[in-house]
Length: 472
Image (cartoon, rainbow, N blue to C red; front, side):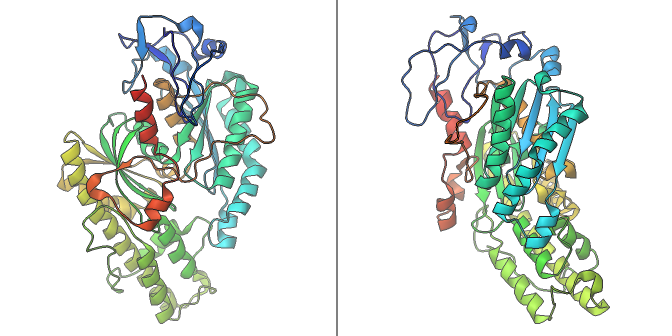
């Protein structure tokens, strides 16, 4: 189809070719696995890997696909089967999803005991826990789907953002599977996966849409223009809301085995949300950025003033002590979510100015499982005649389904790498992106916060995609 070669960032190295009529090449993926890659000399920019196309696809009548989604035959979607692997933080997850959206299996190994023991994620301990279970988790996903590796079409894996030690475990496993069975490998952005999993559940969800991604490590408001094209409207300048929930749960002596968020939410139902007057963060800043460090400090001061001892479990607390803890939990939750509401309202206004056709606000990530959060944000979107879309709780927390589905979405437009070697050398440098922005900052929402500047280690996913399209 194409006589020359193209260079792309390592995030998505090889593009499938699509006819100008947008009809997808009608062969099953297993046939594609057998295509040989021929070596040709090629100039490439700094840090960009080679990109090669099978010679059997060469034709002057073709062009590179830049459309939102090529028109795929139903049989192609049915035949496409992707394994997704997720190890960016504290859960080891794998899932197998079919191209038509059918979830064939989903397995998650939780590190709840480690969370309870350390009061949060300990990276080295988390890495060791991932390493101990990753092989079994992937095997269980295959067994539950009644498949073998030879029946897979591709492997998708999170390469960032996340904890480097943890990311490495998943990437190594994905490369072993892909290399051993000659499968293409798809590098996935963790936050894009949180946003796109909503498209698996809500079939009417089309680009553009607004997304609020909230978890233990992230607070992100993005306008999703298209696959791989995002504008960052706001992010956290210090701590994320999930971190604030976890610390509040720890200081209140709650059971951390199910993470802090659910524990605080449950206790808050018993408390008076107006009893403790916490101030809403960043009221004076008219942007969409978040800050939870100050609210955490307010909570810690309130707990100390009431002589609450976190070493005394909630189950052993007196009636008065339990009531005090419940009041703090409820008051904290109210203000933490008010901060979300204020930022989301402004983000909706900005988003409608940029993309007037948006109809949905997607709320995803672990904190999106919180029913109070969902109820409050539903009131926000109703003011603007938008629809709130939240994945089910088991797809809000980190999972393999969202990675597999994002792999499928990227595979459809040709963003994937050829099969890696069966065995990587000992000194192989894995492409891990612990700090990896999803989109470019919106001009009105730019922050000069030192933490934001420090976080921009890798070029954003959006900038990489846009650069690759400009080369075509």
